[in-house]
Image 1: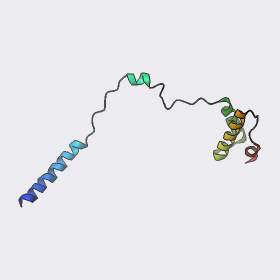
Image 2 (image 1 turned 135 degrees about the vertical axis):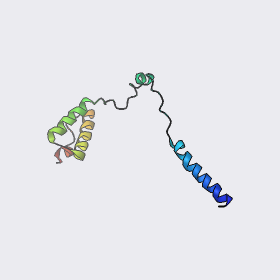
Image 3 (image 1 turned 90 degrees about the vertical axis):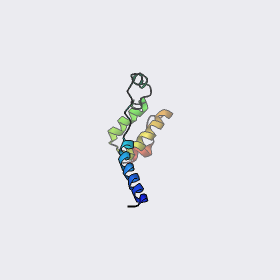
Image 4 (image 1 turned 180 degrees about the horizontal axis):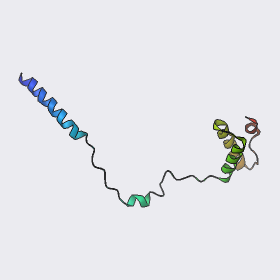
Length: 97
């Protein structure tokens, strides 16, 4: 065996042996109680407050049995018209079935 082939074999063996050492993850940091006290205002999973118009339009969509795109379109038009001061949604959405 020549010197360069021995050197290449040693380099390959050292890379394979040290690859697992570098692949290990660092130990997780210790959790502190400070995160739990400040996490409440920035909690992304907090339920949204729904307006009265939105809840009423949802009830109307449930009564009509709307699902999917039709429900979404109906609720969108219903909320817009409710905020504008109208009592009922646009007739085009109500007639569609």
